[in-house]
Amino acid sequence: ANSLALELAGIDDDTPDPVGGKILRDAKGKATGVLIDTAMSLVGDLIPEPSKADIRTAVTEASRRLLALGVTGVHDAGIDLREAEVYMSMARDRQLDNRIYAMLSGASDNLSGFGKPITRYGDDRLDIRSVKLYADGALGSRGAALLEPYSDDAENRGLPFFTTTELAEFTHRANDLGFQVGIHAIGDRGNRLALDAFEEVQRGRASLLRNRIEHAQIIALDDIPRFAELGIIASVQPTHATSDMNMAEDRVGGERIKGGYAWRRLLDNGVRIAAGSDFPVELANPFHGLYAAVTRKDRQGLPGDGWYADQSLTRYEALRAFTLDAAYAAHQEQRLGSLEPGKWADFIVIDRDYFTVAETEIDDIVVLETWLAGERVYPFTEDLQ
Image (cartoon, rainbow, N blue to C red; front, top):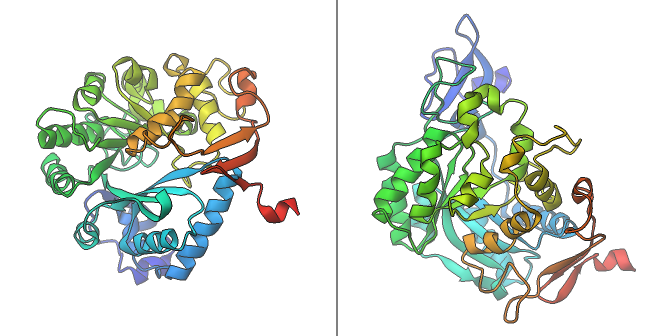
Protein backbone atom coordinates (compact mmCIF):
# COMPACT_ATOMS: atom_id res chain seq x y z
CA ALA A 1 0.00 0.00 0.00
CA ASN A 2 1.25 3.51 -0.76
CA SER A 3 1.58 6.28 1.81
CA LEU A 4 -1.87 7.74 1.06
CA ALA A 5 -3.53 4.36 1.55
CA LEU A 6 -1.71 3.93 4.86
CA GLU A 7 -2.85 7.39 5.94
CA LEU A 8 -6.47 6.73 4.99
CA ALA A 9 -6.36 3.44 6.90
CA GLY A 10 -4.90 5.14 9.96
CA ILE A 11 -1.74 3.04 9.83
CA ASP A 12 1.34 4.67 11.30
CA ASP A 13 4.58 3.48 12.84
CA ASP A 14 2.84 2.75 16.13
CA THR A 15 -0.11 0.75 14.77
CA PRO A 16 -0.05 -2.71 16.39
CA ASP A 17 -0.05 -5.82 14.22
CA PRO A 18 -3.52 -7.39 13.99
CA VAL A 19 -4.05 -10.99 15.04
CA GLY A 20 -2.94 -13.23 12.16
CA GLY A 21 -1.21 -10.39 10.34
CA LYS A 22 1.88 -8.22 10.26
CA ILE A 23 2.74 -4.66 9.25
CA LEU A 24 6.29 -4.81 7.92
CA ARG A 25 8.59 -2.10 9.21
CA ASP A 26 12.08 -0.98 8.24
CA ALA A 27 15.14 -0.89 10.49
CA LYS A 28 13.95 2.38 12.01
CA GLY A 29 10.52 0.97 12.81
CA LYS A 30 8.68 2.81 10.06
CA ALA A 31 5.79 1.06 8.30
CA THR A 32 6.95 0.11 4.79
CA GLY A 33 3.52 -0.34 3.23
CA VAL A 34 3.86 -4.13 3.03
CA LEU A 35 0.91 -5.75 4.81
CA ILE A 36 0.92 -9.49 5.53
CA ASP A 37 -2.22 -11.66 5.68
CA THR A 38 -4.94 -10.17 7.95
CA ALA A 39 -3.14 -6.81 8.00
CA MET A 40 -4.20 -6.39 4.37
CA SER A 41 -7.78 -5.87 5.53
CA LEU A 42 -6.75 -2.62 7.22
CA VAL A 43 -6.55 -1.12 3.73
CA GLY A 44 -8.76 -3.60 1.90
CA ASP A 45 -11.78 -2.71 4.01
CA LEU A 46 -11.60 0.84 2.61
CA ILE A 47 -12.06 -0.30 -1.00
CA PRO A 48 -15.69 0.23 -2.09
CA GLU A 49 -17.64 -2.98 -2.52
CA PRO A 50 -18.73 -3.85 -6.07
CA SER A 51 -22.42 -3.49 -6.81
CA LYS A 52 -24.56 -6.59 -7.29
CA ALA A 53 -24.69 -5.74 -10.99
CA ASP A 54 -20.89 -5.68 -11.09
CA ILE A 55 -20.74 -9.05 -9.33
CA ARG A 56 -23.23 -10.52 -11.80
CA THR A 57 -21.19 -9.24 -14.75
CA ALA A 58 -17.98 -10.63 -13.27
CA VAL A 59 -19.57 -14.05 -12.66
CA THR A 60 -20.83 -14.20 -16.24
CA GLU A 61 -17.45 -13.28 -17.72
CA ALA A 62 -15.55 -15.65 -15.43
CA SER A 63 -17.96 -18.47 -16.32
CA ARG A 64 -17.33 -18.01 -20.03
CA ARG A 65 -13.59 -18.14 -19.53
CA LEU A 66 -13.91 -21.28 -17.41
CA LEU A 67 -16.13 -23.04 -19.93
CA ALA A 68 -13.50 -22.37 -22.60
CA LEU A 69 -11.01 -24.16 -20.32
CA GLY A 70 -13.34 -27.13 -19.87
CA VAL A 71 -14.34 -26.26 -16.30
CA THR A 72 -18.01 -27.12 -15.75
CA GLY A 73 -18.07 -26.63 -11.97
CA VAL A 74 -16.17 -24.65 -9.37
CA HIS A 75 -15.82 -24.54 -5.60
CA ASP A 76 -15.95 -20.84 -4.70
CA ALA A 77 -14.35 -20.57 -1.27
CA GLY A 78 -15.27 -17.61 0.90
CA ILE A 79 -18.27 -15.69 -0.44
CA ASP A 80 -20.16 -13.02 1.50
CA LEU A 81 -23.92 -12.61 1.79
CA ARG A 82 -24.14 -10.19 -1.14
CA GLU A 83 -22.34 -12.63 -3.40
CA ALA A 84 -24.61 -15.41 -2.16
CA GLU A 85 -27.64 -13.29 -3.08
CA VAL A 86 -26.27 -12.74 -6.59
CA TYR A 87 -25.58 -16.45 -7.07
CA MET A 88 -29.09 -17.34 -5.92
CA SER A 89 -30.64 -14.70 -8.16
CA MET A 90 -28.66 -15.89 -11.18
CA ALA A 91 -29.56 -19.51 -10.44
CA ARG A 92 -33.27 -18.64 -10.21
CA ASP A 93 -33.01 -16.78 -13.52
CA ARG A 94 -31.17 -19.73 -15.13
CA GLN A 95 -28.15 -17.49 -15.72
CA LEU A 96 -25.46 -19.56 -14.02
CA ASP A 97 -23.35 -21.04 -16.80
CA ASN A 98 -21.32 -23.31 -14.47
CA ARG A 99 -22.20 -25.37 -11.45
CA ILE A 100 -21.19 -23.46 -8.31
CA TYR A 101 -20.38 -25.07 -4.97
CA ALA A 102 -20.07 -22.01 -2.76
CA MET A 103 -18.50 -21.71 0.68
CA LEU A 104 -19.57 -18.85 2.93
CA SER A 105 -16.80 -16.73 4.38
CA GLY A 106 -16.26 -17.67 8.01
CA ALA A 107 -17.32 -14.30 9.39
CA SER A 108 -19.97 -15.03 12.01
CA ASP A 109 -22.50 -12.61 10.53
CA ASN A 110 -22.38 -14.53 7.24
CA LEU A 111 -23.34 -17.76 8.96
CA SER A 112 -26.06 -16.25 11.14
CA GLY A 113 -27.42 -14.16 8.28
CA PHE A 114 -27.68 -16.95 5.73
CA GLY A 115 -29.78 -19.61 7.41
CA LYS A 116 -29.68 -23.26 6.39
CA PRO A 117 -27.59 -24.77 3.58
CA ILE A 118 -29.10 -24.93 0.10
CA THR A 119 -28.48 -27.69 -2.43
CA ARG A 120 -29.34 -28.33 -6.08
CA TYR A 121 -30.71 -24.81 -6.40
CA GLY A 122 -31.72 -23.41 -9.79
CA ASP A 123 -31.78 -26.64 -11.80
CA ASP A 124 -28.83 -28.04 -9.84
CA ARG A 125 -26.50 -25.16 -10.67
CA LEU A 126 -25.90 -23.91 -7.12
CA ASP A 127 -25.05 -25.40 -3.73
CA ILE A 128 -24.22 -23.24 -0.70
CA ARG A 129 -23.51 -25.76 2.03
CA SER A 130 -19.97 -25.08 3.21
CA VAL A 131 -18.07 -22.48 5.25
CA LYS A 132 -14.46 -21.35 4.77
CA LEU A 133 -12.23 -20.64 7.80
CA TYR A 134 -8.54 -19.75 8.10
CA ALA A 135 -6.02 -21.36 10.42
CA ASP A 136 -2.98 -19.42 9.18
CA GLY A 137 -1.44 -17.38 6.37
CA ALA A 138 0.73 -18.14 3.34
CA LEU A 139 4.14 -19.79 3.06
CA GLY A 140 5.69 -17.22 0.73
CA SER A 141 5.00 -14.36 3.15
CA ARG A 142 6.09 -16.52 6.10
CA GLY A 143 2.58 -16.23 7.47
CA ALA A 144 1.96 -19.99 7.45
CA ALA A 145 1.95 -21.19 11.06
CA LEU A 146 4.80 -23.61 11.82
CA LEU A 147 5.49 -25.83 14.82
CA GLU A 148 9.14 -24.73 14.79
CA PRO A 149 10.73 -21.51 13.46
CA TYR A 150 11.19 -20.89 9.76
CA SER A 151 14.47 -22.27 8.46
CA ASP A 152 15.19 -18.90 6.83
CA ASP A 153 13.78 -16.73 9.65
CA ALA A 154 14.75 -18.13 13.04
CA GLU A 155 12.60 -15.68 15.03
CA ASN A 156 9.40 -16.41 13.14
CA ARG A 157 6.90 -19.27 13.44
CA GLY A 158 4.22 -17.69 11.27
CA LEU A 159 0.79 -16.29 12.04
CA PRO A 160 -1.96 -18.54 13.41
CA PHE A 161 -5.31 -16.83 12.98
CA PHE A 162 -7.20 -18.71 15.70
CA THR A 163 -6.67 -21.12 18.57
CA THR A 164 -7.85 -24.71 18.35
CA THR A 165 -10.69 -23.83 20.73
CA GLU A 166 -11.85 -20.94 18.55
CA LEU A 167 -11.73 -23.06 15.38
CA ALA A 168 -13.59 -25.87 17.14
CA GLU A 169 -16.30 -23.53 18.43
CA PHE A 170 -17.02 -22.11 15.00
CA THR A 171 -16.80 -25.52 13.32
CA HIS A 172 -19.24 -26.96 15.86
CA ARG A 173 -21.68 -24.14 15.19
CA ALA A 174 -21.45 -24.50 11.41
CA ASN A 175 -21.68 -28.30 11.50
CA ASP A 176 -24.73 -28.12 13.77
CA LEU A 177 -26.44 -26.02 11.09
CA GLY A 178 -25.56 -28.63 8.46
CA PHE A 179 -22.63 -26.81 6.88
CA GLN A 180 -19.43 -28.55 5.91
CA VAL A 181 -16.33 -26.64 7.10
CA GLY A 182 -13.19 -26.12 5.03
CA ILE A 183 -10.21 -24.72 6.95
CA HIS A 184 -7.36 -23.03 5.08
CA ALA A 185 -4.15 -24.50 6.51
CA ILE A 186 -0.69 -24.09 4.99
CA GLY A 187 1.91 -24.68 7.72
CA ASP A 188 2.34 -27.79 9.85
CA ARG A 189 1.02 -25.93 12.90
CA GLY A 190 -1.90 -24.59 10.86
CA ASN A 191 -2.76 -28.11 9.73
CA ARG A 192 -2.48 -29.43 13.28
CA LEU A 193 -4.74 -26.65 14.58
CA ALA A 194 -7.33 -27.65 11.97
CA LEU A 195 -7.00 -31.37 12.67
CA ASP A 196 -7.22 -30.82 16.42
CA ALA A 197 -10.36 -28.71 15.97
CA PHE A 198 -11.99 -31.32 13.74
CA GLU A 199 -11.03 -34.11 16.14
CA GLU A 200 -12.65 -32.25 19.02
CA VAL A 201 -15.85 -31.48 17.12
CA GLN A 202 -16.13 -34.92 15.53
CA ARG A 203 -15.20 -36.72 18.76
CA GLY A 204 -12.39 -38.56 17.03
CA ARG A 205 -14.59 -39.99 14.28
CA ALA A 206 -15.33 -39.17 10.66
CA SER A 207 -18.23 -36.81 10.01
CA LEU A 208 -20.95 -37.22 7.41
CA LEU A 209 -20.43 -33.53 6.61
CA ARG A 210 -17.02 -34.35 5.08
CA ASN A 211 -15.05 -31.48 6.58
CA ARG A 212 -12.02 -30.37 4.59
CA ILE A 213 -8.60 -28.82 4.94
CA GLU A 214 -7.91 -26.39 2.14
CA HIS A 215 -4.33 -26.56 0.75
CA ALA A 216 -2.84 -29.01 3.32
CA GLN A 217 0.59 -27.93 2.16
CA ILE A 218 3.10 -28.57 4.96
CA ILE A 219 2.01 -31.39 7.26
CA ALA A 220 3.91 -33.02 10.12
CA LEU A 221 4.43 -36.63 9.04
CA ASP A 222 2.67 -38.03 12.10
CA ASP A 223 -0.38 -35.89 11.32
CA ILE A 224 -0.91 -37.35 7.84
CA PRO A 225 -2.75 -40.51 9.05
CA ARG A 226 -5.11 -38.31 11.08
CA PHE A 227 -6.72 -37.04 7.87
CA ALA A 228 -7.95 -40.56 7.12
CA GLU A 229 -8.84 -41.35 10.74
CA LEU A 230 -11.08 -38.28 10.90
CA GLY A 231 -12.35 -38.51 7.32
CA ILE A 232 -10.90 -35.09 6.51
CA ILE A 233 -10.60 -34.33 2.80
CA ALA A 234 -7.29 -32.83 1.67
CA SER A 235 -8.24 -30.15 -0.84
CA VAL A 236 -4.97 -29.52 -2.69
CA GLN A 237 -3.78 -27.45 -5.61
CA PRO A 238 -0.99 -29.20 -7.56
CA THR A 239 0.35 -26.03 -9.19
CA HIS A 240 1.11 -24.65 -5.72
CA ALA A 241 3.92 -27.20 -5.49
CA THR A 242 5.53 -26.12 -8.74
CA SER A 243 5.00 -22.42 -8.00
CA ASP A 244 6.41 -22.73 -4.48
CA MET A 245 9.33 -25.06 -5.14
CA ASN A 246 11.70 -22.12 -5.61
CA MET A 247 11.30 -21.14 -1.94
CA ALA A 248 9.41 -23.86 -0.02
CA GLU A 249 12.46 -25.83 1.10
CA ASP A 250 14.22 -22.60 2.07
CA ARG A 251 11.26 -21.81 4.32
CA VAL A 252 10.93 -25.17 6.08
CA GLY A 253 14.19 -27.07 5.48
CA GLY A 254 14.95 -30.54 4.19
CA GLU A 255 13.22 -32.51 6.95
CA ARG A 256 9.87 -30.71 7.12
CA ILE A 257 9.57 -30.59 3.34
CA LYS A 258 9.03 -34.38 3.44
CA GLY A 259 5.50 -33.55 4.57
CA GLY A 260 5.15 -30.78 2.01
CA TYR A 261 2.81 -31.14 -0.97
CA ALA A 262 2.91 -34.82 -0.03
CA TRP A 263 0.11 -36.17 -2.21
CA ARG A 264 1.54 -39.69 -2.47
CA ARG A 265 1.90 -39.97 1.30
CA LEU A 266 -1.66 -38.73 1.73
CA LEU A 267 -3.06 -41.27 -0.75
CA ASP A 268 -0.97 -44.11 0.66
CA ASN A 269 -2.43 -43.33 4.09
CA GLY A 270 -5.98 -43.63 2.77
CA VAL A 271 -6.67 -39.90 2.57
CA ARG A 272 -9.11 -38.68 -0.05
CA ILE A 273 -7.66 -35.87 -2.17
CA ALA A 274 -9.73 -33.28 -4.03
CA ALA A 275 -7.72 -31.21 -6.49
CA GLY A 276 -8.26 -27.72 -7.84
CA SER A 277 -6.41 -24.62 -8.99
CA ASP A 278 -6.97 -21.93 -6.31
CA PHE A 279 -7.52 -19.41 -9.08
CA PRO A 280 -7.02 -16.46 -9.26
CA VAL A 281 -3.91 -17.22 -7.18
CA GLU A 282 -2.94 -19.74 -9.89
CA LEU A 283 -4.17 -20.10 -13.46
CA ALA A 284 -7.55 -21.80 -13.80
CA ASN A 285 -6.60 -24.22 -16.60
CA PRO A 286 -7.06 -27.72 -15.08
CA PHE A 287 -4.49 -29.23 -17.43
CA HIS A 288 -1.80 -27.12 -15.74
CA GLY A 289 -2.82 -28.80 -12.49
CA LEU A 290 -2.94 -32.29 -14.00
CA TYR A 291 0.52 -31.76 -15.48
CA ALA A 292 1.92 -30.55 -12.15
CA ALA A 293 0.33 -33.47 -10.27
CA VAL A 294 1.78 -36.07 -12.63
CA THR A 295 5.22 -34.57 -13.32
CA ARG A 296 6.00 -32.30 -10.34
CA LYS A 297 7.51 -29.91 -12.89
CA ASP A 298 6.77 -26.31 -13.79
CA ARG A 299 5.51 -25.31 -17.21
CA GLN A 300 9.09 -24.92 -18.44
CA GLY A 301 9.70 -28.60 -17.62
CA LEU A 302 11.86 -27.93 -14.57
CA PRO A 303 13.35 -29.61 -12.67
CA GLY A 304 14.08 -32.31 -15.20
CA ASP A 305 13.44 -35.21 -12.82
CA GLY A 306 10.54 -33.50 -11.06
CA TRP A 307 10.52 -31.83 -7.65
CA TYR A 308 10.25 -34.60 -5.05
CA ALA A 309 8.85 -36.76 -7.82
CA ASP A 310 8.17 -39.61 -5.40
CA GLN A 311 5.11 -37.61 -4.29
CA SER A 312 3.60 -37.42 -7.79
CA LEU A 313 0.26 -38.94 -8.77
CA THR A 314 -0.51 -41.30 -11.62
CA ARG A 315 -2.57 -39.88 -14.48
CA TYR A 316 -5.64 -41.73 -13.25
CA GLU A 317 -5.17 -40.55 -9.65
CA ALA A 318 -4.73 -36.97 -10.77
CA LEU A 319 -7.79 -37.04 -13.02
CA ARG A 320 -9.89 -38.61 -10.29
CA ALA A 321 -8.78 -35.94 -7.82
CA PHE A 322 -9.93 -33.21 -10.21
CA THR A 323 -13.24 -34.91 -11.01
CA LEU A 324 -14.90 -37.65 -8.96
CA ASP A 325 -13.15 -36.91 -5.68
CA ALA A 326 -13.69 -33.18 -6.12
CA ALA A 327 -17.38 -34.03 -6.52
CA TYR A 328 -17.17 -36.17 -3.37
CA ALA A 329 -15.71 -33.21 -1.50
CA ALA A 330 -18.89 -31.31 -2.43
CA HIS A 331 -21.34 -34.16 -1.65
CA GLN A 332 -22.01 -34.40 -5.40
CA GLU A 333 -20.49 -37.74 -6.38
CA GLN A 334 -23.93 -39.27 -7.00
CA ARG A 335 -24.62 -36.81 -9.80
CA LEU A 336 -21.27 -35.36 -10.91
CA GLY A 337 -17.62 -36.32 -11.35
CA SER A 338 -17.92 -39.26 -13.75
CA LEU A 339 -19.95 -40.32 -16.77
CA GLU A 340 -22.43 -42.90 -15.49
CA PRO A 341 -26.17 -43.57 -15.91
CA GLY A 342 -28.17 -41.23 -13.71
CA LYS A 343 -25.53 -38.50 -13.57
CA TRP A 344 -25.46 -35.17 -15.35
CA ALA A 345 -23.81 -35.28 -18.78
CA ASP A 346 -21.06 -32.78 -17.98
CA PHE A 347 -18.00 -33.56 -20.10
CA ILE A 348 -15.38 -32.14 -22.45
CA VAL A 349 -13.87 -33.06 -25.81
CA ILE A 350 -10.10 -32.52 -26.05
CA ASP A 351 -7.60 -32.54 -28.87
CA ARG A 352 -5.52 -35.51 -27.69
CA ASP A 353 -5.68 -38.50 -25.34
CA TYR A 354 -4.70 -37.45 -21.82
CA PHE A 355 -3.77 -41.02 -20.91
CA THR A 356 -1.42 -41.71 -23.83
CA VAL A 357 0.26 -38.43 -24.81
CA ALA A 358 3.77 -37.75 -23.60
CA GLU A 359 3.85 -36.20 -20.13
CA THR A 360 5.25 -33.03 -21.64
CA GLU A 361 2.05 -32.62 -23.67
CA ILE A 362 -0.45 -32.82 -20.80
CA ASP A 363 0.00 -29.12 -20.16
CA ASP A 364 -0.74 -28.35 -23.83
CA ILE A 365 -4.06 -30.21 -24.13
CA VAL A 366 -6.71 -27.99 -25.73
CA VAL A 367 -10.43 -28.15 -25.01
CA LEU A 368 -12.45 -28.40 -28.23
CA GLU A 369 -15.92 -28.66 -26.71
CA THR A 370 -17.50 -28.31 -23.27
CA TRP A 371 -20.88 -29.90 -22.49
CA LEU A 372 -23.06 -29.20 -19.46
CA ALA A 373 -26.20 -31.22 -18.72
CA GLY A 374 -26.04 -32.71 -22.20
CA GLU A 375 -25.89 -29.31 -23.91
CA ARG A 376 -22.85 -27.98 -25.73
CA VAL A 377 -21.90 -24.70 -24.03
CA TYR A 378 -18.50 -24.16 -25.68
CA PRO A 379 -17.63 -23.10 -28.37
CA PHE A 380 -20.06 -20.25 -27.79
CA THR A 381 -22.88 -19.87 -30.30
CA GLU A 382 -21.62 -16.50 -31.55
CA ASP A 383 -18.21 -18.04 -32.27
CA LEU A 384 -19.79 -20.68 -34.51
CA GLN A 385 -21.70 -18.21 -36.67
